[in-house]
Image (tube, rainbow, N blue to C red):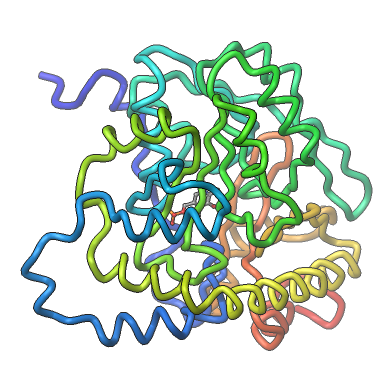
Length: 361
Ligand SMILES: *Cc1c(COP(=O)(O)O)cnc(C)c1O
């Protein structure tokens, strides 16, 4: 007897980069400057008596605060247990079983799994590679995405795991030419120089997903959201169901949006400065290709054939207490390390043990 639903046997269970035991975790693009101060105080002051009661079913106060933050109306916001849940619910609510989900490849690893888990068919569309020398550059193949005739087109900008910023004109074209829904994943929006939120007004087929896990430093609280036309957002809310956000998460997220936006912007500026510095240091030795990134991480791939395999490099970094995300073979890219940017002393520690870096191992 088959226990699972048809197709589930082939879905990989998400495996984290490591078991959590490391001094420095540069593997998952969290905020390396920590959690925001007002949200931390709100958590510390959370009334434990509230634990006995249910939170509000759809966290309306938070939806309102997020609407103000993003510049939309509250009926255009649905929250969820991380943007992971919001993406999963959007797939379930907006497509029929058997429909296609087209996405640039490589992209957020969980996307093809969520598609399959909802009976949808992922269609991977390779990036066009415009890299040269130590600089990696990728472009969306808009014609191939459109040719997939997908019910849902998923585009992540800045893209995880490459960091690639997709230009506004390209996203506009994808939204305009797509036959169905376009989901733009803006988990790293705060690090980028533009947002697709402006396009929502004239694009009823567009959904933008966001999170407080990255720039806002609240990954442990699991707060994500989607922005879109009220009719679309309401369907996603049905797939999500009530009580997805815990009361402490809502309280801390409200405090962050009320008082920590300035803190967040300063940490974003820090991350961008460290990204620039890390990128130069890695390219400098000529042994690594570093992809153009508009996020709080970089993707680096060995150019020098004498470097060890990336999995071996990642294991050696682990021995020094540093976790990074290693990919054995990304399509069109090959073996690569994704490194979250952190304060410079941490970056120096990494560069000290990374082979092929001037002054490093
Ligand atoms: C981290 C990440 C998310 C998930 O964020 P959560 O809100 O923590 O679930 C979504 N999309 C991309 C591209 C990410 O990198």
